[in-house]
Length: 541
Image 1 (cartoon, helix red, strand yellow):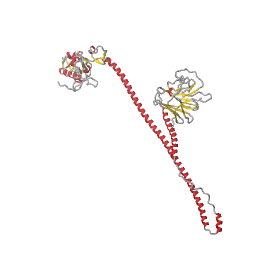
Image 2 (image 1 turned 180 degrees about the horizontal axis):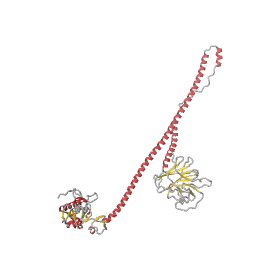
Image 3 (image 1 turned 60 degrees about the horizontal axis):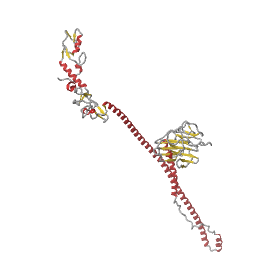
């Protein structure tokens, strides 16, 4: 029997219950109803009418089953059931029997090793032999879920060998091993997986941060390189100006020497020309007199002749050209000395400008200050009050020497700070490692964990064994301290003069470093009473 695929549920609906016909019957007027619906409808009435066309029947009609409609309804129901079964989605198990468009499986058979959609599952629900098969929720790749040795479902997990096993395995090869249901182990492994995912995500974030750190380093390196090139251009331009100036000065000295020689020669020539003129006049008079034959006139005139003027001995005079030997060398030596000083001054200024970028904000730690020291409220100043205050002792406090540390410590990278020391007659300044001796005798040396400058009436030294005495060009007003922890470098600068004082290189740092200060002993004569002041950096060109 052919079916019309375009028919809908309305074509097979009962006019009374509006549902698909159930045991459809036909009235004498030709309308179709469910047997139960029309029977119930007429049971409560005296007259029997058709609910559709209201045709009145004299007696209650004896309705008969409409075989044709019944077959059409059955066919429609089957087609609807097929349509209601959805096609398989990517994450779902497909029916192994469907050809063409695969439908979603609703059950899997552990005997047939096959997954079935609702339509193809029907024999397992009807045939007696197939009803004995074990049906489970749909499983993909069913053959991989079966024990190869016992042909049983893998539904347990051996915790000893970390493998999936069937029930028979627990009675043979895994008899003494602890086993748990797959779901229980799944929950354990899922928790582990969650932890692993969290750890992996953390590792990813750490690596992303490292990439950013590397990129930031490259960007900083580019900026440093650009700044270095700019500073180099400034320094070398200044040096070229000095060289050009010295070249001009050298040329001027040579020209002046040549001019002096030319003036000397001109004066000699003038003197010689004057003598020639005088001698020529005398020669003319002599010639004229020599031709006179009057004896009286000759003798009278001869007496009036002038004697030749005294002249220098020109035979010993030698005019030598100026010698320029050594002039260029002397100029170059002077230029080298000047350039060295100017180059050091320019380099120091450029270097100070670079290290000032690493300024850190420091405050002094009162828990480390010797009892004779007073700190300002903002923790930026320290001075000696001349008497010992009563303070609680602690492991951090210096108790023998007038020292204090900053609150901040540094275990990597670079940092810079400046301290105002004007009008002080004695002070210590630098950095110290965390484990520096705070209670007993301290020898301030790098070996003992401190890198410091010391100033008093005898001058400026870097504390070491032996001390390194340093020149003082002018009165110090402010000292800058720069530390590159990773490179093992501690440098000191005269900030006002913008020159480098001293650098300790090749240092080994293995623990945190703290900025270290001492204002020196209070002088009862009134000197050295001013405080040491941690001052903000003023980056000027």
